[in-house]
Length: 219
Length: 290
Figure 1 (cartoon, rainbow over the protein chains, first blue to last red):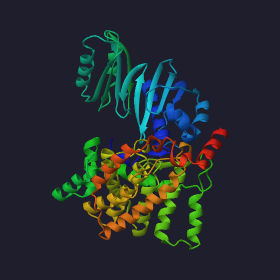
Figure 2: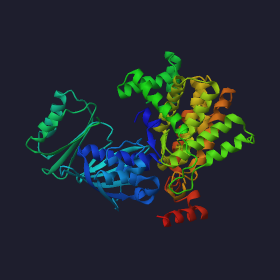
Figure 3: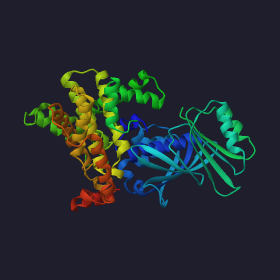
Figure 4: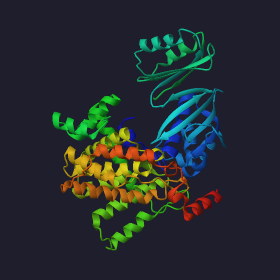
């Protein structure tokens, strides 16, 4: 949190949680997949489902998926813009259980066929939290350059990633480790203070034991 | 960010650095930006607030059709010389309506601290700027004061209606605007804190009970009330009237009240005005129209 979370953001109304937060969630998906999104199934939960339409939550999510920012005056017209630009989307409802009331599950597909499933919450004052990626629990804000590495749960992968970041002078702001089961699939989420170079991400992708690397740039 | 206004005032007195500058320097450290960058960022927030007033359109209506055109009605009343409370308060009220209505109609605003309370700070600051013909730079300084006070409230309590009820949004906005106006009237750090304390005290316990869960009823008109309250608190402060409870303790009181509030009055639209017979009727009507 910084003072521009207090005075700011400049945004299209009416709600920081239901509109600006929703744009940010869509935008986080856009950044995470790293390419133009062509398909999106958007499942609304809780308050997003109940009062979303009146707040433009649906339009805001679609605007974010196209990479619009929270202050983009095109947010209210995002549906027609999406249709013209070849983003095929549909809305449904879901019960995600014990999550924040302003939550949504998105299944998205990029133009290269890359797929991503994300659960995210809008936690108030326009701030968001990514709660799940491809079925694995995570917890990050999307405010920093974020590196998400899916790997096999075995010794050495954390060291590989952190030494690469040290070598590139990238400082780690926060770091979290999760795994589905011992020796199974694991995920590390690193929020960084600097951008991670693309060639380093490519290098990571080719390491043995690394299943998938997702990177959310802020540039 | 600072955890108490007391700490900011202490630093101001010990180091001889102005309240707004302390907030700016803290921002530079926090985000790793230069003083110029930080100032430009804050100035752009102020200019966007001005745009949100300038771009007001009296003819548009919100998603529900229930909000729109109110500021124009007030303007007409002011022009007919009927307003007893005077031109200054009239302009504050008008701008608060303009920005809050624009927000409900999906126009561009500055959340300060939230979208639901976005009319308060611009209504007060812009009207003071007009009155004293202050520069945008001076107004940017005031906006640092506004943000500094809001930051302390965010840390000690909350700025979100879902967490703290309307007191956390409209109450915090009023405290922030009162502090900003107090700075523009020449207030010291102590006086800024005093104005913030008075500003929030008047809204402690306020329920967040929006009809159909929309940022419309009662949110838009509460912006007017919060902005006018901010003016009265800044003026009381400059007249030497003291809040007997210090600002930081008022913020803590809001936090403890938030804990005691039922979820039905925390933005869930299951209590208060939202479930009055008329509130329910409006909600049903909206559901049917979709």
